[in-house]
Length: 131
Image 1 (cartoon, rainbow, N blue to C red):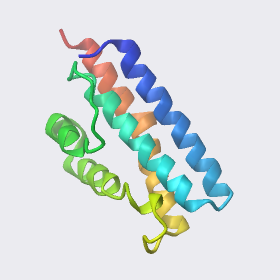
Image 2: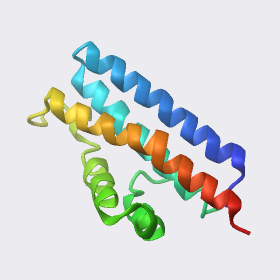
Image 3: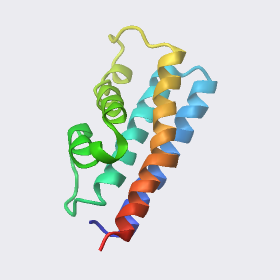
Image 4: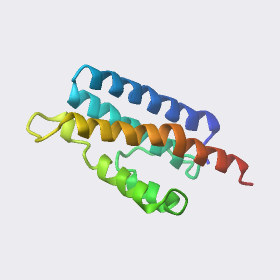
């Protein structure tokens, strides 16, 4: 397990990006909002992973690791949602991507909120109790 400070810093930054995404949604700025929502998810997932991995995680593709370590505790549906959402990483980054709407952003922000406020804090607490 990485040190508690590193885990908490990732979770805190995840919540910051989530808040930015929510503000951008209100302003109708869908692409930047989606980018922030996806990044929030990535950071929350990394916070969870740092409870079981000591080394720095320098990749964006963290859904597989998340599923490998937490599928039994968080469920396959949540792991699938994380994987599908993180696979959308390029959608908000380039103008040639199709079909982003407000509901897409709301779904991403909802998943980010669930991870940051409910799932990852439980994972962190559970790991603190492990010997």
